[in-house]
Length: 152
Length: 447
Image 1 (spheres, rainbow over the protein chains, first blue to last red):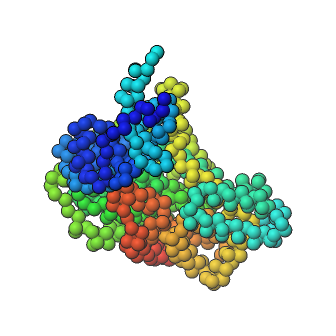
Image 2 (cartoon, rainbow over the protein chains, first blue to last red; image 1 turned 45 degrees about the vertical axis):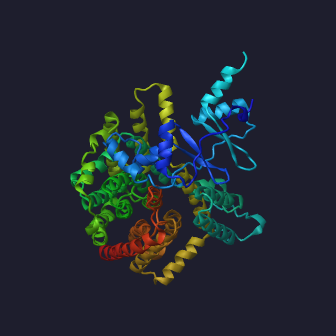
Image 3 (cartoon, rainbow over the protein chains, first blue to last red; image 1 turned 120 degrees about the horizontal axis):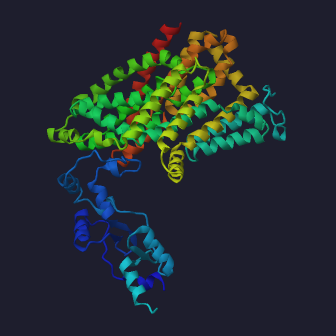
């Protein structure tokens, strides 16, 4: 069993020029943890997910590398966070998507696939190593279904 | 010809040791300045080649390492690493911002003051690592540009750091090499540093002060911060304050009790570790200790080690003596002219290159002027000139001090990058003014 046998071959995708507003709707409506981002040719560019949204609604001083660790003293309301998000709704997602390309090859074996899902705690894109085209996404649920369907 | 007892006298390929050591030294410094490879790696490679090339024996190389400087730096790093977990530094920053009712200019003044005081007693890099994130949080809430605040904090960190023995690595190196104590720095450096801090605020006010405004709603956000909640561990807070206070007292009396600052700092670090470990299980103690030791800036420590060996090798060949004689020829052997020349050259050099290797080279060079200038007392103004030049010169550009680069890194990550030229256009003239003040101070106080 390989990653290509576990993946969903028709995942929801975003384009780097899509607005953050559109990505927010998508994430909130379908409760995705992260969505792959592909260019016009279908090549994988990165992912946009709930962590990207959190990075926008929380103060930068909290989210940055070597930023504030203890934030107990910061007393902000949901309105403050919403206001911060609104400032970015019309910006393209390329501004804050994750470019770190944690990805699987279609031939990645079962155990390595599951270990990467375990490590990232999220769905992982399956990408053709030669063309960089997105082939699908593997999630906990896809993997779980396959395991439960298997003969004991 | 090799003049120093530490040298082996068997240079590889029969090369002239003076040329070998001199070329190695210059090449090492050039590679350090390019910042393409980590400076600690380069310094250690240079030190290794100084020994393997035959300029120094291993024993002589180790004699060149100033373990007092390394011990003082490491001890203070450990104390600060443990102390900061209590939240005391965040408490101070928020408390001071609220004391001025979140007025944007008032906050800038308070942040400068807090930064300068912390820099005087902690190292500059640690200070800005603690202050810059909270500054960005405050400026974000006030919806004001972070640049004036970060600029002011850089100035304050380098001015405050100049005030004490432990405030800035150049001071630690000078104090350790020459035997100048905590009190010597307080009496000689602090008065000018205290005067320079408010003086620096004047141009900052003229450039930005009147433009710093914030709405009542945004100021209210700062007033809603609860500084008491910044304290995460009250027990650790009191322990940290007690250890920091005891260490400062230790530094003040170190000379009278015949102890070196490194012993005070390392003992303070050991007590701090003991207090924070007690009464946890041994497993938890080991875990905490690993985290604490991991936060010690080993890159800095090893960089110092390599530098000390490199400079010791150079000293062994007699190059530094030749350079010192040249300087004395230029200044006519007049102590006042020599002190002023050292001040200005140190300031300009420190604004453009890392001041640590510069000071490491200058120390033995100044030491070798002792006989010509008439004894160790005659050298004292030269040490203060070097300390002022190296510390305040760091304000001249973004690369002038490690703390400046740390602040610039924070600004970049916050989406408000500090441009090199923009910073230098404002900072360099301001640095020159502070050096001019130091010039007057040194001239009238010591000559």
